[in-house]
Length: 175
Image (cartoon, rainbow, N blue to C red; front, side, top):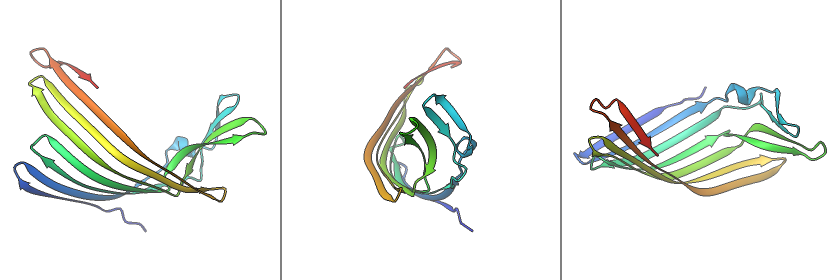
């Protein structure tokens, strides 16, 4: 039997500062398409197939953060995925076929830092901005060979929401 607890704590330091942290352990089961063992031919040399032997992903996720001045949030997080699922290509040179199959890898570790801003420029224009710098490391073993992939990355998004007309019934979003 496994436990999947969730705990969240927050502390309001002042009207302009809230500190928080949370931990969550969860399970992510493979979807039907990933489990389906039948082959789907994309073309004469490329096949996509499922893997009925996939194991569920167990995720441990930790976050600490602070919200301040009503508009800003900063967070640091750490995630560990056990049995993470990736769709990997397998090349058969003899038959000249490439087969994409989902496989469990041993472990994925990710940590990162997020910065978020959310505010209204005017009554009809609101802005949301997020940027995340994160590091991801995948570790597994294929055919008896230990494989590690590690990289830093960034995700950033700027979203502008506009409302029009007197009753605000028309809206637009620019990302």
